Length: 284
Image (tube, rainbow, N blue to C red; front, side, top):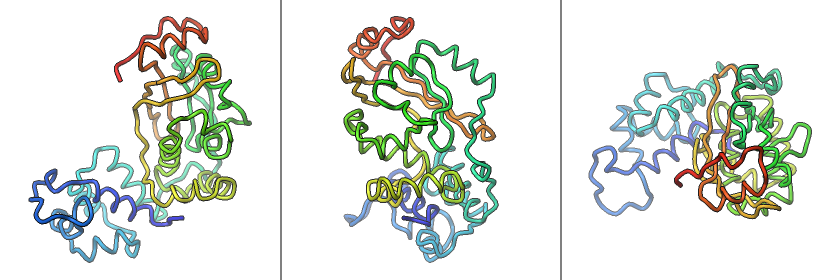
């Protein structure tokens, strides 16, 4: 299991940036995709030896200025820049981890009111260890028969990796598993006590299917997309989702699902979600 999250994130991001994106000529055929370390070094104004030390975990305390130049060189988005900063702060031990006092399970009244207003759409509020804190009745009707609400409290990451029903529920299980690991790895990962405890549990109960992803999947799950879910009554559904990150003090995220095509709209109608006929398919 990787203990060099900062270096792995820098390496994986480097391998996804093409020379054309940063205004460099492609040159001769490359043995590996993305930018060379020497190219990142030139763009960031540091030595190639320093880039190597960062990626290999021999230097884990880059300055804020170096982080900024690396972020520019690798064309990081705003969200990726925040993630890079959190990784560096986690290594330094200066990042305050909410999980040190246990996972956050308190839902603010205004957040609860917002979720209530989302009916009849399936919507669920998760904390940073993937526990389900509260959800709409629409989500209960959608997720309950699948098994997602089992457990006290229900935990989506635990369901995906340890429940035999998960691979049948998710036709794209590998992608879903990647996304759950990425969500757990946002921020300092094992520097957070609550995340570390869940990771230790899944290392034992799920084994290689979990640990392999921890060593290869960077943080930052997709904030939107299409998810396929097989419901025991409605059949296969295509659900468009949007993830809304709450303020950092909440350490929670709200995921809202909408039908991605007319067939899914009709299937949700058959589930008789309260007022589900108000849901309309979105493009995707």
